[in-house]
Image 1 (cartoon, one colour):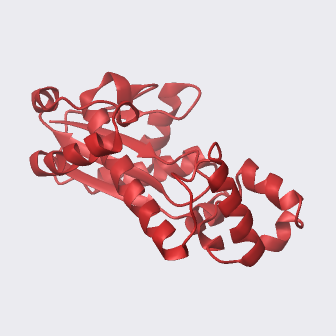
Image 2 (cartoon, helix red, strand yellow):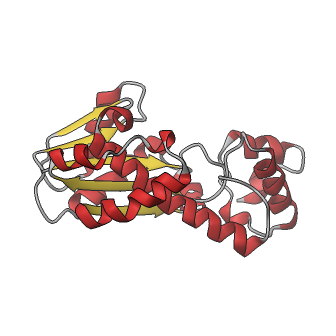
Image 3 (cartoon, helix red, strand yellow):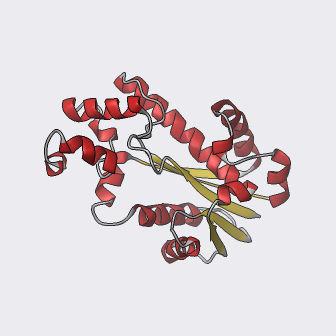
Length: 212
């Protein structure tokens, strides 16, 4: 058995950060034909999602914007990810021979050490850059993380009535929606306040401290 963990939504200014774990027999991931979620269309990811869940153990957490805003007053985003990934590992009902993580740290192995500090159990952990591209088990985790985050973004968009895509600052519609949320307060709970894009918007409205 091998396990992989990846996230989706790290750079978004809206909605949750999603982290997923997938675990199963290594050969079965190769036969499924999974790829890094960024190389697949939404339709392809959503077609693979139920098959991954049927064939392998899967779990995930959604870290809301509100929780991120609170936690980032005290700790870094990398530390938050490490804590949540350790939680997913501690919930595993069996012992994989190895856990592979897609590392957000500049020095890849440092992230594996972060996760190890928070687990109650002993795992062989390998943290690498581009693990979602190089290891099918991590690719599968990236698909799960992306799909569940996309669905949550769909829910937020429908709830609020704003028009935006995935919530990333590269999308002008997202930036416009964030401006409106901050101006009116409608949907502000979904905005990640400690992101540079949001700070720039706030600088033109009022002091950042007024929003905490």
